[in-house]
Image 1 (cartoon, rainbow, N blue to C red):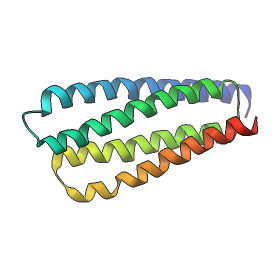
Image 2 (spheres, rainbow, N blue to C red; image 1 turned 180 degrees about the vertical axis):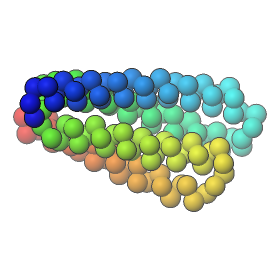
Image 3 (cartoon, helix red, strand yellow; image 1 turned 90 degrees about the horizontal axis):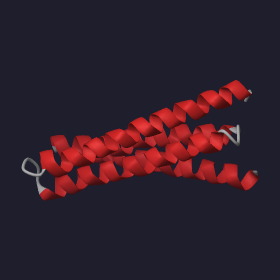
Image 4 (spheres, helix red, strand yellow; image 1 turned 90 degrees about the vertical axis):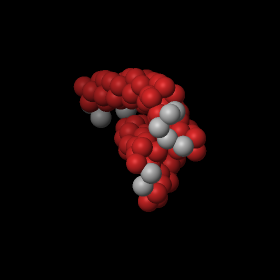
Length: 130
């Protein structure tokens, strides 16, 4: 990847990671203060799991941005995309499940988990092959 593409990838993953971290903080606050009186405790725990994993992977995206500045490998970019997709599927499905109670949304969550695993695997591959 040309140097300009590396800078773009860095900025993209840093920006998306920072935005996602901010949204995770907002979701956590909403869950703690806005949902407690409106959803069952088990659904509140589901919502909080979504926020927690969103924050983990927002920080992972920031790490991907850092790594992308040092390693232009495709596996680094795939890791970043996988973390974004994982967050949307995993955390997104948990948020919707907690807010709507629609149980079939729980079937989407493992797909997000697989995307997270792909992301971590790609990041590990990038580190090990360097």
